[in-house]
Image (tube, rainbow, N blue to C red; front, side, top):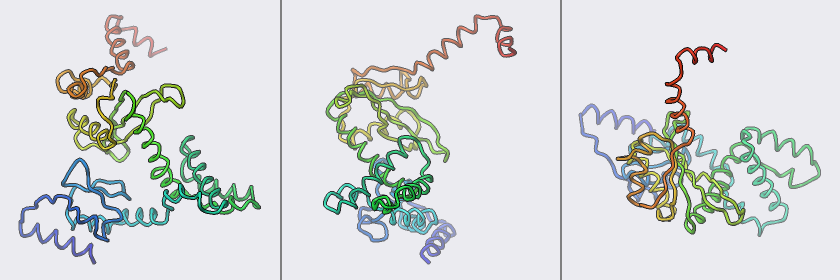
Length: 304
């Protein structure tokens, strides 16, 4: 019924030729029982919102559009799946529970970590748990395991990954680090920016690379990309002055001398050391060197 009313309202507006004004995010929506469990403001766009269960940006930030999204099949499926998954906070408060429940929680976290570390598909969790139950029929914690693909994915995203990011953010607040960024297009044709940080880990006693963020970008210009990176560090209270190095591929958007990301970064951190991709540089060198070779040589190499 709600979906039907929203569609009728949109059609009615189009027929009357009314101007569609952009709606800013209303903080009161966060208190509304219809939205508070999944709606979040978009930090980069006051006219947009984010759905925490669908991990999607909602560009039309008005109540009708939000109700349409809430009534969509994708949102309802994701919302029900997340609702059935156990909150990650309960896993880190199991010390006051019984020993059996504590062992089950630890086992499910360890299995999730194993799946992530070895790039095992989440769907295999369904079968892996059943195998463990068959292997240890008399071991109570093994029989109480309830780890399936949906639960494993949420434990990883909302629990392990969140804890790791908080740990890396804490390190970057207190030490110098380098930033490595690269942009790509994922299977959903969305442009995403990967942000890596390189720092010296005092616990491991070695230089460590960590993925700090995957940002979906709307504006792929140098200004847009730099703003995404800058906002990411500000959200985690990491001072830009801790950045000592910057690396990326050699495209003009990243390393342009006039309007590249590295130029914008140098305005905030003049001492930053910039390094382009060695593979790209080597490819350019080889390409120029090949121009001095006979033309028939390339055909000969390909034929052999």
